[in-house]
Length: 189
Image (cartoon, rainbow, N blue to C red; front, side, top):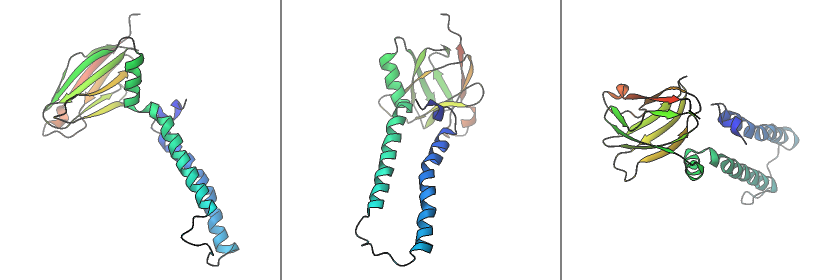
């Protein structure tokens, strides 16, 4: 429903601007009234919440709850859980990160077929970040060593090409060389 807000990096920025508009409209009004219409000290008991304050708190809480409820479906964990339940075939890929390399069980995938990445680190903090061929980050996973279960995420590639994999968590002197590549091909069917 709100996909257009999350498809570019400007979505969250635009949403925050939209939330600021009511406050930007009311703030000058309040300042004007306090400066010119009624500059005397208020008779309101400071321990009592006024109706206006109550309305503003209700609006702020309602907006917070509504935005969070709508954004749940855009969270990677929710998408992973939803895809695992509905997808008929998910390709499982095991990835092990260790100092300055990845062991990836499969590096070739088909467009439109969900891939479950199960990723773990065996030695130190690592990142598993997949880049689109145009350089845009598709997703990032932080890998913490010593966890019982690997971190997992389901992703469906939409375009064929060579996708770079890089570590975004500084992991030592050869961190810059911790890279790999995934190949995505058009589906046969």
